[in-house]
Length: 483
Image (cartoon, rainbow, N blue to C red; front, side):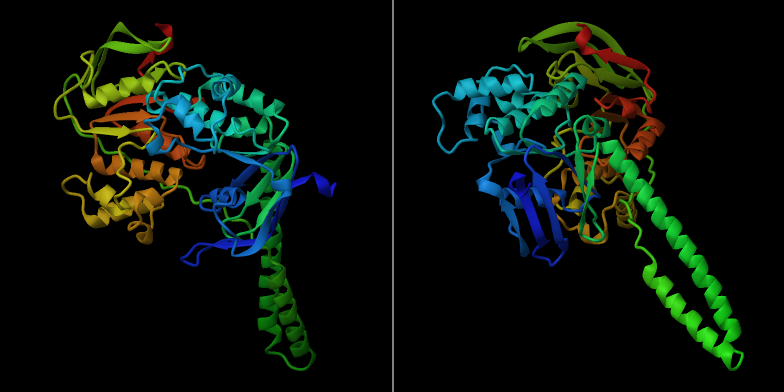
């Protein structure tokens, strides 16, 4: 029924000021109560679609219709830096033009919905990555939106958090559109897919659960490849016959002319097979050669009931040793890594003169005002030329024209790839990786896992992605949840 349509894109074309077309006559509709995945290659325009829905961008041509001025709530990927100093209560208050009198009750209700319990006078920046991820979702929910937009909502969530989110979304009776690379998560509640093609700038609509749609897309690509192969064979056959008959006289020449017309028809009938994302090139992270006890951990602080408790441990890491740190959201995993990097805890230490390659889940190691070129240049080691640096950047899909971009203009996925390019150039003796797959396109993850596993220095890793972790050999595991 037409009255069930809540959102409609009517031949929407959008291009940025540099005349780069992102969407070309895109048309689709979303019915009330739908649970849809927004899917597409890097740069296809998924975030642009969200911004058009929210009204932050306006189409160059066409229209975006939202029925009865339906309200929209968005769970962003990360909390804005300027909001990190706000208390939880102040942060949620930003969702309202006029703060309601029962704001604390509303906060309690949405915090319960995302299975999070933290004091509302606590600073948002003091929360763990997983707790911040739940806060982002709760911020969207407190607005009670008719359309809920979720951008990578499982980043930083542990298994319990993901399961709780799935349960919530299945029961949620309003419209949900999700961008995510977590296939298992999407398959649990997705009813259809809006697929953006980065090459044609068009969208395709599919109905069904996520895995069925992915299979359908792959089958279609296989059919297109097969059909094109058959047409190509016919074209080659006809060209050979044309070459033969065109040198003959009379009727043979007419036959050659007819065959040329068939070749043109075959060429027109060839299908432009969908091209998928480029995957980053395989790479090696060179290591600094170090002898001795590179990392020593004698005690750790774990967070229970919002209080830090010190526990004794005995962990020594030398070159080629690998430590996996596990535990639920909020227990202090990222805090432990930060105290190690910043040398702010007596219980943990790093051998002097060790170069540390730190991948921070919030990209705290990146200066957003720097260009991509300057960011890479700042970590280059002796013996690496500018040409070498550019070649490494290209392997992570940073073309020459992108080198002058400010980091603030990069997508979260591009910031992640930039962080890995910096690790290659840094040649660290110690890799400290805090959720290194967050925001990263799933096509790149096997390449990243191989590079990390082949690294010959010391590794400390936190990750909530089991399929990623199992591809990497570990000598020791520190489970903060046991203490």
